[in-house]
Amino acid sequence: MVTLPKSLLFPLQTLSGRGCVARLIPECLAFGRRGMLVHGRSLAKSGVLNRILTEAPDDQTLCTWRYPGGEPTLDQLEDLLSAVRVHGAEWVCAVGGGSVLDVAKAAAGLLEAPLSAQAYHDGEPIEASRIPFVAVPTTAGTGSEATTVSVLTNSRENLKRSIRHPSFLARTVILDSELLKGCPPAVIAGSGMDALTQAIEAFTSRHATWLSDVLALKAVEMIQASLPLVFEGGGEVGDAADLLLEGSFLAGVALSNARLGVVHGLAHPLGVRYHLPHGVVCSVCLLPALKFNRLAVGEKYAQLKSCLGGDPAERVSDLVNQLQIVSPFSGQAIVDREGIIRETLASGSAAANPRPVEARDVDALLSEIFA
Image 1: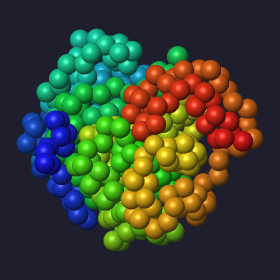
Image 2: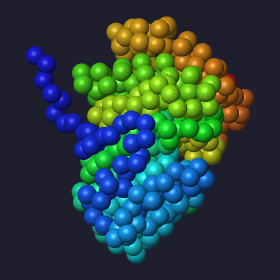
Image 3: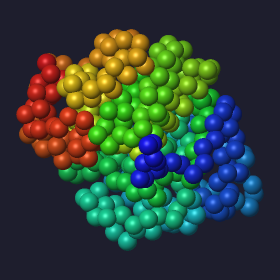
Image 4: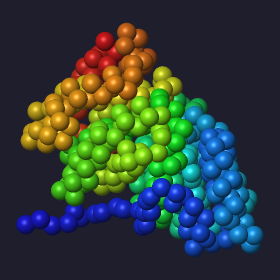
């Protein structure tokens, strides 16, 4: 008998379609008149920010905060929290890539929390937030618009980890593929491979359910079919961009309900030590992880083969080459090998991997990644 999973996590409302970002401000007004809009640099440069702001009525008090760039840090989060509190915002909206969404999501989630951001990053339990978060991704994608997770780096300790709570989920998600237009090819490639990795890892996770499997496989299908086309087209709007953005969203929903695997366990300590984009690290780690997990995932490997149109390891290798992603680790020295192993084993992602991961396994994977 097929029954529902014991727990399900979905954004409250999702709007999709080209041009639907025009509905952003009217949707946010349902949460109050005072809001904080967090955005990246490119949004102002493209003119989209100005178009969004013109939709705001005169009696709405809307404040904007420009994300400074790079991977999201605790210091950035504290700066944003201060700005949101000074403004007295009733809701927080993010329009940008995964980093923009992650720091804004954490700001909404911790706005009324009594402790510092670092305390929760260190493991203090998080209480439910009542501050609405609205997410509009401009890359495809981290899937952050669909998850309960915010990935942040403690720059002082050089430590990257997630904070999460079900109340972090967006109240409204807007998926407008027109926002992908002009996205640099390298960003399309890296973020797209992050989305594909998330879909594959959610599908093979030990916490996967029949429902997360349906979502994850559909995400794999949509992403692998559209990513090369969007990459070659430079992010131009079209059916492929719709598929890629929506596939990334489905991957985010799947991982929220199933967790991930050893790729993301490795990606955080590697990314923070080598200062690399998360999607690039995932791209390089995915192939060794597929080989490592092949026997453990059983018939799911065959299902991935059918979905991808070939052996998953071979298809991933071909796709990485097609996207012109070159390993930044090949032939390099491994910095803090023991620290990487320790942090990988401590991660919830590695714990969800379909094959149990031990120190010797991480050591072998690192040797392959850096070969």
